[in-house]
Length: 615
Image (cartoon, rainbow, N blue to C red; front, side, top):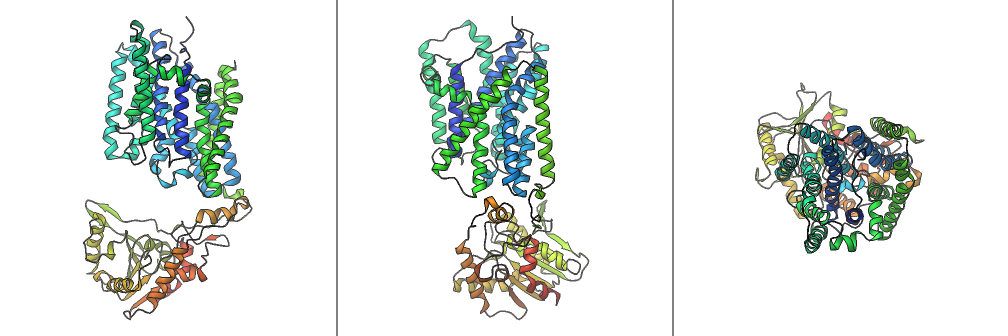
């Protein structure tokens, strides 16, 4: 008997890989037309669980399982192409990404090298969020889930076999437990459900269960051809219908992931002679795509994402096709000149050690760059100064009570309340810098809570809690109240009515009142790229409607009758003289993000407010 079991090659499984990768690429390239293509990842999970578990079961049955050989095989399979991609994006980013972009990229590289990406993206946001297209290694979350599975799965099966436990029962128990967690978290924590390994393992375990049946149980029975054809047709129908009908509004994986997962299992179960398998999946071109599917999966998303970052715009149809062609060429080259030679090499142990060492080096280098905030010294300009707009504290809710953010000199007899939305929040760091040694500041900020026509009428629980805090402050002697928010573009008569409500400052009785206008949004990524990288220099977007809205607010409020202790403050006039916003001056960014001022930007934009509070 050979040293270890090697599964008999089935070209139709490579064909199934092709279906999976094509669906993923179409989803990433043309999401408006192929909204459910993300299910290709679920197909990959089932395939992987089937192939790897077949090898483990067979070697355990023959008492020839070796952890060293198992993990060496995983290194030979996974590391070469992954190293090529990680190294390539590292080099690209060095020359063409801004420090903040490069810092983020290197966090992703370090997570990819450590097979920890799913936890990184879990903490950040949802897979389908707006910023996802600017995360070049977002797709590595699925590879991380697979490798986390293969850390534990061989150990579990080996230990169970030593205890003479029934491996099928064990596999089914773990499958049901993981699926149960998936269903539970789909309603409790949908983002966690998407990324967590324990809510995804059931898909690999479907493949593992199928491997056990094929290897152990089906040796004694035969399946008639009509049944194989039926399974094959149902399987491809499940996958195609999922790819066409699913979309990102679904709570996924949840129950929905069963459809593509079971579809993949049926196609594998039907065998190479199933009608879809022999007529479609065994087609030479389809098989070829399947053979390069792993490097193609690795290459396609960084190309899409980095191109969007570089051009600061979505890719059009032609650019997307060009990106797909580039990814396909690189995948073929990776398979032909990196993966295949390494697999055929006879330097076993030395090769594995070298690959692991390289992965450790690139992971460590990425971590160093990330900790250095993107290595701004790469560029022949001063690092851009962009100090946070916030003081670092926030409104905290505990046991049904909202605790406001308090900063500055907490022992001062002068108490200033700042309230509104995030356009109130972006004043806090500047006010703390200018007056923090003289004044005690309280910040209450959330949406349009305190703009309600009727006190406390908000349905939002946090708004109601904020009103509770305002009522408590009515019993205190406030030095000043600052109301700031994004005001929008209200008609003059509506604005006049609204301002009368605002003049009442929520029933408080301060000595001084300040109403602070908002600022227009800008394309900060574009401006920062222009600052650092001449090759990316381009005209940045100007949002004329927001410029006009701010002009109108200034024009329509300057003539309003108002209390003698109230002033209007217009950051827009200082930040955007003559309608052109000063995004970056010298080596200082006046914006923290696309819609909010940095500390330095606010200091430049609100000197009137600071002076008013000092008097």
